[in-house]
Length: 132
Image (cartoon, rainbow, N blue to C red; front, side, top):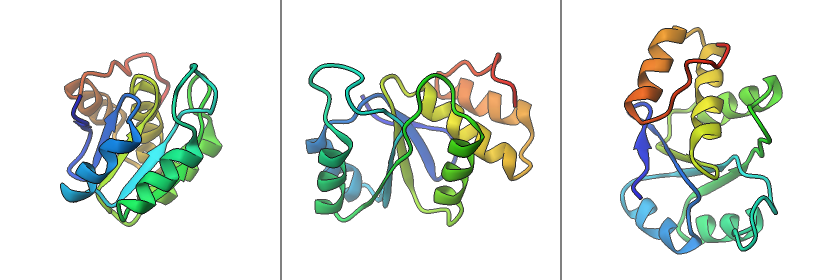
């Protein structure tokens, strides 16, 4: 599955495989953010494995694990990681937690909540119940 656009520089995706990261780098992605806790599902790649694959592909990697919905600390961490506007793919099991973390981080910058919900809906994520 191809990452889905949330903004001109941020995409979200379900779980990525380490071997897919080189293609993302070749497409211009410069940073990968994992919102998936290690050990959530049997056989999923660990954050360390994903970091190695991202770095081997020439990308930066950040691990901001989210269980349930993101909290203020995770939103702030994502906001800091996205502040420079580098092309970034965020992922978790389905992409929903990543979309929520992105929306919450954008709210910290003052972006309108309805605008964020609409962008997420356009990417296939329903954030209508997320308090923004």
